[in-house]
Image (cartoon, rainbow, N blue to C red):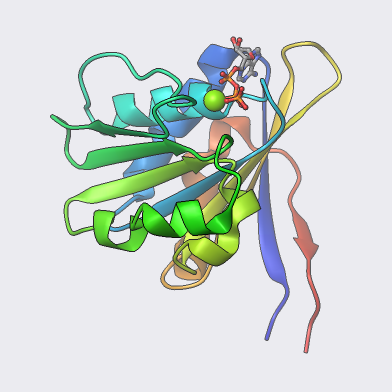
Amino acid sequence: MSAHRRLVAQTSTAVDTQALAESLTAVVRAGDLLVLAGEMGAGKTAFAQGFARGLGIPGRVTSPTFTIVAEHTGGRLAMHHLDVYRLEHLREVADLGLAEMLDEEAVMLVEWGDAVLPALPDQYLEVRISFGEGDDDRILELRPSGGSWPARERLLGEVIGPWRAEDDEEGERC
Ligand SMILES: Nc1ncnc2c1ncn2[C@@H]1O[C@H](COP(=O)(O)OP(=O)(O)OP(=O)(O)O)[C@@H](O)[C@H]1O
Ligand SMILES: [Mg+2]
């Protein structure tokens, strides 16, 4: 097994993060899962907004913190947007039936998804957003995991080109 690759990008405005997310939709396919990780206010919802725009979804995407699940249609693919922050037990996530929701015409973005990985399908792209030096600086780390994600790594790198920072290799080699 080779080391896991981590693609790194930097943005300095919310608009920038949205534009990066919009570009990423060039690489997504029906059935894809994106796990959005990062502290409160990091920009997970901002990312989802740009992503929706890239899919051609009309209308506003807001935070599904209280509704847990929002479904957005009208684009190239439907987008299920979840925020599992308020769920206290893995069981509650399992009860949402995410695997069934992820069908041939939809993609799924899960805010705080990293906290509930055992209840999620095991093929996903993790997007981890962290705070940079300036107030509006953000670092986005993309980790392709499982299924066809590793094979799409080069393409991922290309579409985030304008925001690309230095990449890292990490993880154990065996
Ligand atoms: N580079 C940036 N990328 C994304 N958001 C930014 C950036 N710079 C500033 N912001 C601001 O940071 C905030 C991000 O809020 P957002 O709701 O997207 O975060 P979140 O990660 O979804 O938080 P929560 O965990 O509460 O759901 C917004 O107010 C946005 O305008
Ligand atoms: Mg949010």
